[in-house]
Length: 315
Image 1 (cartoon, rainbow, N blue to C red):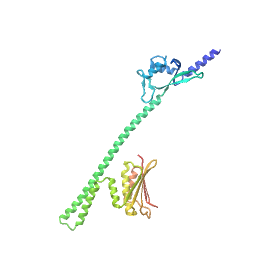
Image 2: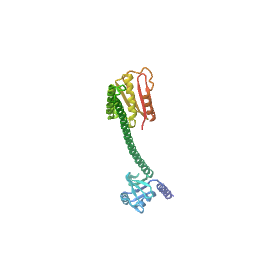
Image 3: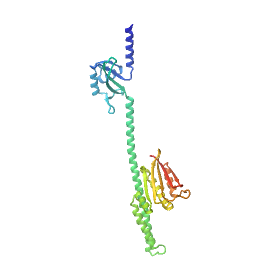
Image 4: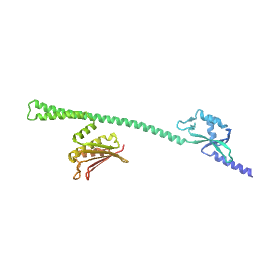
């Protein structure tokens, strides 16, 4: 009766072993198979063309896979089989309860992981492509903006020179009542100054304007994306004019920070505090339109000290 029970137990163990999702085979120290499950025999037929007889022949097949079995480039000891499944092999030495050593060859089905990595790689490749295209678009947009600024400056210079020529023509023509010598000189000085300003960058013009107004600009914080440089420039110009005209300030402090969703521009001056709430005029109103067009916000603090805060969305 006992032999039958042992046989049943062995059969149950073998049946459970065959049902494992892993491919497993145990070899003795000479490389002879002792116990292999059906999954390992199935893979060995792809690799060897026959059932597994010896560990060495399996190692040779894994080192130089036959046609139809392809090693992956991403993961070591991993192969794509003809049925499109992907298996990762691992060899180790194990010891049983009696102290006998065996070599265990095991393979895990990593098909889903492999396909997920492939998909991730494709997505990353597309993201890199999109980033390059976005960078090119940004560069083109900046070039268009620079050209637009240049044309605008040329147009304004043309209008200024036209005005100078008109008053000069009137003066030379003897129409001394409608135009004076001082007016002509003033117009030409204005045109020459405007021409010099036209050669400057927006940053240089801003610094020149601040210097002439007796205002020192001090800036700190994080770098604001180039897409918002026009808003920053406009905000400084508006607050610079107000600092000179109303606050009698000597310094304008610009800080750029960032929160979870916004870049935040804060501008304050060291001048006289407003006596009452500031009513937004043309400059602040136009600035607000620009800011809100981006999906941002603008807040004007009047008391106890003037602070202009602008939030623009992170890109």
